Image (cartoon, rainbow, N blue to C red):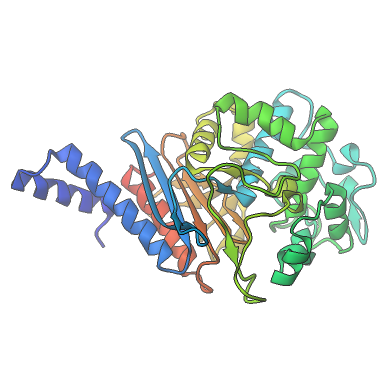
Amino acid sequence: MMTLRHLTAAAALAAVGLGLATPAASATESRRSTLQESVDAIQKTGTVAVVAQSTGPDGRRYATTGLADRATGRVARATDRFRIASSTKAFVATVMLQLVGEGRVSLDDTVEHWLPGVVDGNGNDGNAVTVRQLLNHTSGLFNYTADFPAIATVAGFEADRYTTWTPEQLVGIAMRHAPDFAPGTRWEYSNTNYILAGMIIRKATGHTWQQEVTRRVIRPLGLRDTSAPDTSSRIPGQHLHGYSDFGGTGPTIDVTDFNPTAAGSAGAMISTTGDLTRFFSALLGGRLLRPAQLAEMKTTVRAASLDPVWPGARYGLGLMEIPLTCGGVYYSHAGDLMGYTTRDGVSADGRRTVVLEATGDGASDLSTEVAQNALIDTELCAAGGK
């Protein structure tokens, strides 16, 4: 099977032979064309719009396709904002690890230490769950979004799309259920973990997780199109509209306006491909965390339940580790919220980053996921892998 590297080289040689371009110019143009082809392939699986950015030592490239707004017919642009969903967790974990580096929080602290009585009942015990287990999803706590009609059906969403939820209410949903397993014995993704992490950040600092993410990450990096909203239901500025039928539970509706407290510190943030590129590059490049805390973030456990989408996936502290087909791994944190899908990949040194956003539900099978993963893998492997 011919790799992108082979295709790029062949295109460059052909162009030189015809006197059409220099090798470097042709290689750059070929990679830009390949990125566009990958974006088009994602849209063909059933998404409404796709925007992508691929960045490395050789420069920055963008590709877009589809409509940002079906009602007006406005086409998607590379600078459009969108809801990043669970990619928010990488920001929240970064803040928590900064607090660890400052000696204000320990990864071995229990939830009970910081939030007395919050994790309790039905077999739940805050004394048995640590901050580390929250961040790497080994707590065993029930995922509150699995029992949350507001994001499960068209009717449920329309009934509660503007409702304000407190973190305590969201955790309370999880506490109605027994733990899925004893803390530290398995891995299973649970949004409840990061709601609790946001609550601990507030207890440790006296400020909300939104304030701390803004002060410690957004402002220092100059992420002008990134925000950690509180109760505002609107996406400010030029943005992508999200569309979903919530698994066929009703007609496809525009889900753009949405009170983000339903996702909170597990998934409320808004950003762009450019800002996410800057964030992940800075994070893996060592500009946000001390070496010891970055090493903790990259210390992973096997996440076998992610295998259907990311075979061989592992999970650290707010950071996924995904194998590359060309060898080595990349780091990431995906985000999925009704109408929005965020995917990203960054090399271990932060020098190569790929970020893409797709709107709409995509395919009912895994073909959209496969196409998204292929784009990231192709871009990172073509840039040198590892």
